[in-house]
Length: 426
RNA sequence: GGAGAGAUGGCUGAGAGGCCGAAAGCGAUCGCCUGCUAAGCGAUUGUACGCCUGAUAAGGGUGUACCGGGGGUUCGAAUCCCCCUCUCUCCGCCA
Image (cartoon, rainbow, N blue to C red; front, side, top):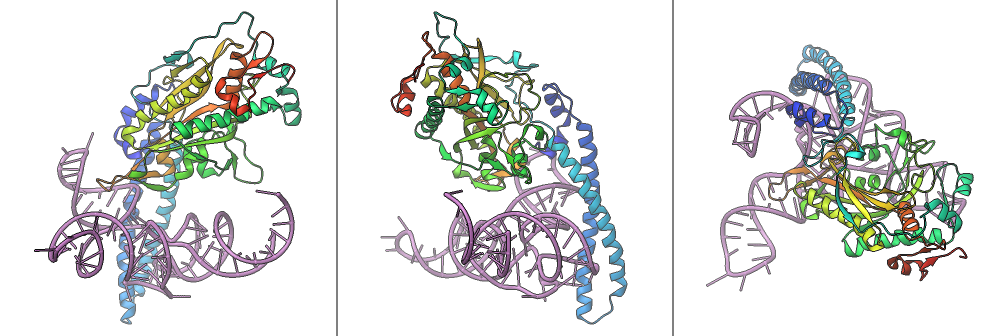
């Protein structure tokens, strides 16, 4: 959510910046409602002031046993006028709030202009495409042949886009979760948290999934709870409606959670394999920082995500999302894309974003600056570290051997109880 | 699932229709005092949104709202009524 005072005073500037996202936003409607709100507010506050003053006078008169019936009657009229205005005000504020919730974040000045994914510039590349003396196969073939991924039974149990992991496949997934958590906890200084996997409407609104993207979420029938689409939601909401001490910042959390996405509007895309599932595992990093350090923290966060792939020895590139590809709540995002030889493509495996104060304003996450005593919004950031299912894909496709086996990256071997290769014969 | 109790400022905790944005204590900050990081004294100590002033600053002035959330009664609600949420205790059930 943008600051309505800032928006009021910088309407033109904001409008130009939002245009770069490639959509039109109704900022004229904002001005209208904002003006209306302030007009009503002025009148109703004046009347309330009158009522407060006169009511005190009534109290005084009654104490002295004097007659107050005349002004009581007069105040009755004032009160009913206040009530009318209050209803008006409530309606206007609700409309204004709703409108503000649908306006996306302003892209940071360093974000390149562009229309879509094809315009995202590469900022870094690590490693190189591994050479193959055979045609590398996609992970769904490898996984089924090794009997570690069972897509048919996954859809039997539940439906399309659900997968059953078996044997070393399940172990590999679990090993990756632990490896990633340990790396971020022990070497990158994050604190592990294990949040609820369902959240309420306020939490979803706080991080920006609601009200605009309800169709992407799974809602639990008979409740107003939603399955989390990412740990970002519960973890960012840890500090919703709190005022933090400046000394507590920055806060770095890391969490493993499953993620549930309805994937509305993605029918026909990535239908094979593990890339696009309704349920997947993810290790997520979340930061709360002071405004002046959030962009340094974003760089560090992105490198923390990249480090996972470096340790696994998987070639990747990092791109900056251009204005046309930038997510709703984000001011700047880096995507880390792992090389997937079986698909002859780079696929997103992590997305690292700085939301500046956009989520903090929605969610009421603030801190008190000690020099001035003033309360300010924190900046929130998050990044996948990494999407676990897609990391399995990257390992299967990059580490596949001519004989059909898959060599486990060295750092994972201890997490797999010494298993260093998954072979056809188990 | 059944029965009961509760939700007040950073914390503890008063309050029972007007004198309450809210006592008191603790904590914190600033100042004073004290020959020494103690004790004492004094002051300050919430958030949001308007309006005025100021340079669309810093600051100042002023008003309104907020005592879990929402609605109602009343000239006037932290206080009365209704609904909801959450917390705690006991019972049942269960991992």
